[in-house]
Image (cartoon, rainbow, N blue to C red; front, side, top):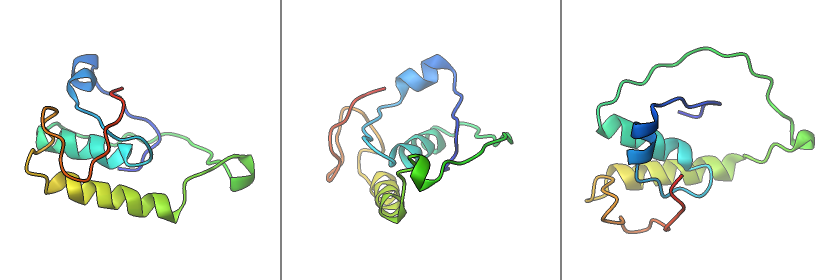
Length: 95
């Protein structure tokens, strides 16, 4: 789920009702694709991660926020319906 790149057909990206504003973007996209029974494939890439000194900002707190978001999305009554905002979700920017 926490990966470097995401590649989807434009119509699929545009149909996702994205609300995430931070690192919860990863679980939100993954959960919505799984709900649609989309096929997810991991493709190896070469990646040199940044250090904190180089500007890496993600930390343990961000992991907990992402997990919390994923659980809320999974058990939300709207099931990710863009017309219904699940309780506890902040309204975000649709990308």
